[in-house]
Length: 377
Image 1: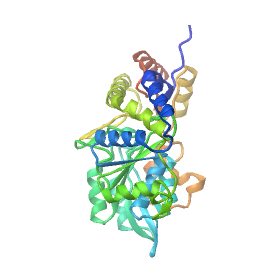
Image 2 (image 1 turned 135 degrees about the vertical axis):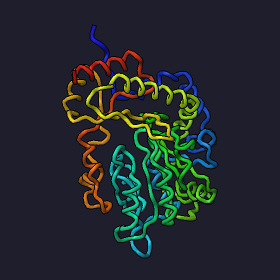
Image 3 (image 1 turned 60 degrees about the vertical axis):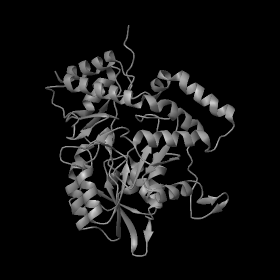
Image 4 (image 1 turned 180 degrees about the vertical axis):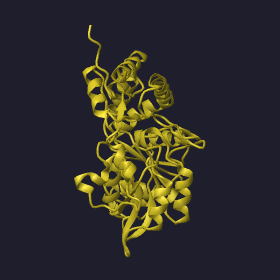
C-alpha cells in the first residue's frame, strides 16, 4: 500500500482535532445573531490578552491590518519633514512591508543575523546611524518561524533613538525571550491567525495588543472607521473588524495552544536528532529564548534537488520565502540599510521548510527523516 502524502502544513487536521468544540462555537455565533464584533470578539480579546499577559487586545481582520493599525495608532505615516521611516527586515512575509506602506510610511530594510533569520541588531544600529531621507519613527522586528528576535538589543537601540517598537508576532504565538512572551516588548504587537499559524482561524484574522490604554483606544477607533460615537468618525479609520465566527473558533482553540506548541517542539527535536551528521543547517535555538516552530526551516546547498526527492516520496515542503521583499518587483526601489543585505540574499536560495504542524504523527516524522537521510546518504 502506498503511504499517504505528508503535507508541509495541514490546517484541516487542526480543525478535525477539535471539530466538536469548533462546530459548537460556530453554531453558537450563528444562532446568537451578532455577526459584527460583539460578545464573541470581546471574549476572545480578553482571553488572548490574559494568555499573553497584556492589558489590551484588539481583534482585526488580519495580521497585515494589525501592523497598519499599530503604525497609524502611533501616528506613524507621513510627517512634515518627509516620510516616516520604519526599520524592518526583507526576509519576511511581504505582508510586513505592505502594511508599513499602507500606513503611509517607508520601510527601511536591514539584514538578518549571521547565524539566524531575525533582524541583526548590528545592521539596525548601522541603519539608525545613517538613515535615508525622512523621519526615523519605528523599529519593526519580525519573530520569524517561531524564534524570537534579539529583543534586548533591538529595544535598547530603538529607545535610545526615540523610536516606537512594533512587534510582528505573526509566527511566534507563545515564543518567549528572557522569560517574556513575544508581544510584550513593543509599544504594540501584531498577531496573525491565518489558518496555518500556531493559533489559526479558519479564515483571515488578526490581533493588535498593547499595554497602553491610549493606544488601545486608538486601535479600536481606527479599526472601525475612526468611530468614537457610532457613525461619527473622530479620526480617519478603516474597516478591519475581527469576525465573530473566527473569534469563536480561536477562543475554542486557544486552550490547546500551549499543548500544540509543545508538540511542535517535540517534532523539531526529533528532526534535530534524525538529521544529525547531514550537510544541512538546522534551526538555531537562541539562548534565553523559547522557539515554538511555526516552521522548521533548514538550509541546504542542494535545496531544490532535495525538495524534488521529497516530493517524489510524497512529502511536502515549502520555501519561506523564495524572494526577499526588496527583490520582488513591487518593492525593488525601497531603501535598505548601509551594509546591504548579503545574508538575506543568500538565504533565499538555501532554505526549505519541512512538514510542521501539531497533528503530524511520529510515523510521518520518521518518514520525513528517513527520506531526507536517503537523499544525502
